[in-house]
Length: 220
Image: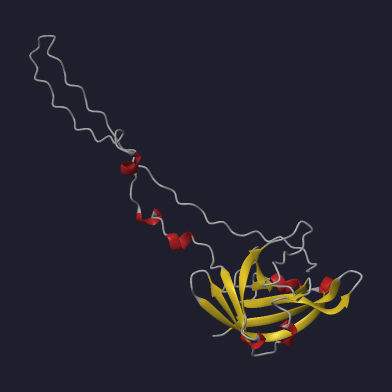
């Protein structure tokens, strides 16, 4: 559906380093009186070695290296979309990437694809959602995306049970080969970018000539 080719690599969090306790000393051997000097054997020095302990007991607890699940958890993933102005229909949101030809994947007609190689909703930048206008005679989730207008609300549900609301600010139409460069921005303020096909349909190519893009900003 989309002609612009991009590869955006996700950021991978660093792992946690465990510091092992490695302090130990051997006890001095007691002197022998076999030479007949009658010397009293020196008491053995108490050993502090941990060599015989299980590995779990040889880890030094250091607060700064403590594992914090929140510190290494990825972004919330969107799982549901609802657009009140489009009959309030709920649709599942699934992560998508790139096809072998470099174009963005589009999920089945009843789902919305979240471009997971970009940013997620709720993060700085443009979170891209795409869906079919129609496929094989069946209306897609974004069949009437071009009917949205400024002020219409969009609700995103996440895998942690939270929701975020957005308000449409702009509706635009671009030729497939002329999409804006900032569509997949990681630096711009947070926004949703919802994309589907539109414009004239080319029966020879069995494809629409344009893309409809609805922009939405978070409701504060």
